[in-house]
Amino acid sequence: MNPQAKLVFTLSLLLGTTMTISSNHWVTAWAGLEINTLAILPMISKSHHPRAIEAATKYFLVQAAASALILFSSMTNAWDTGQWDITQLTHPMSCLVLTSAIAMKLGLVPFHFWFPEVLQGSPLITGLLLSTAMKFPPITLLYMTSQSLNPTLLTTMALLSAAIGGWMGLNQTQIRKILAFSSISHLGWMTVIIVYNPKLTLLNFYLYAMMTATVFLILNTIKVLKLSTLMTTWTKTPSLNTMLLLIMLSLAGLPPLTGFLPKWLIIQELTKQNMAPTATIISLLSLLSLFFYLRLAYCATITLPPHTSNHMKQWHITKPTHPMIAILTVMSLLLLPIAPMILTII
Image 1 (cartoon, rainbow, N blue to C red):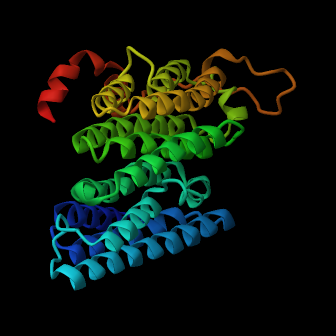
Image 2 (image 1 turned 90 degrees about the vertical axis):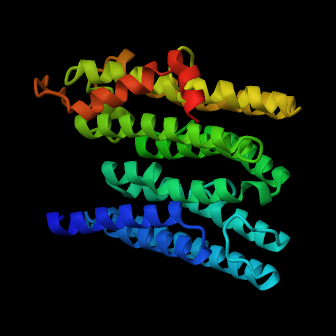
């Protein structure tokens, strides 16, 4: 892609995100979401491959429908109450429509079908943006309207997301699809706690975005898209593969890694809210995700490629790793000991 065009699209993404997260008025929030959607579309379809064009088309249709629902929800609320303020959402119909719209934007069950397909058709760096930066504006809207939304509906969607995200990721061989189902599963954890402790949702999102960004950057460095090629990269970059193993375990939420922190705090908060059954169910459902994280970790480091593999072994790379990967890796693994300090900040 032309560097000037890339700069324009990146600045548009920053503008759209900033507009949405800093606005109090529904129309400016909606405009920010639209700018975001239009800026990411050329990044998805830049390879001109039929799968990339298909992914961009699906993304456009879903996001346009979700934006229309957000506008409809806010107009219905304004018609009833005379308020365009995001935090003043009181009309029951508007709350229901907004929940559906944000679920479509994020890829929450039952509106999750588009996300794995779009991620599979996108380049890795665009996939990184779709999984992290593009989720931030809708999460912010969810955060600002959380007190108005139906807790039972959100809890049901969260449990279904954790279940389907884990279940459908089990038999995947494409790494981008596995990461898409991982994202759906993590969104379930974020949504289950949004009504009771919205700050925990934001903390979970920040840590998830950091760990996912690290995984995408490592995969982009070693140029891997499938499990079969991941098995042959041990000879190419052994240190990065070892880091990938640990970050996968962190994403799975195993102590003493960073990924354990949000899960631990969410389970604690759910128990305080007398929702021990919900906490138990979502904890058990995270075992499904643990299986495919372990599968990725196993392929990355433990499996020696079979002699019948049709992939050539890679040459060992001596090129230095990007410093951003090193910084993100350390943060993705070692933030648990400073949990008290993080909690005082949020």
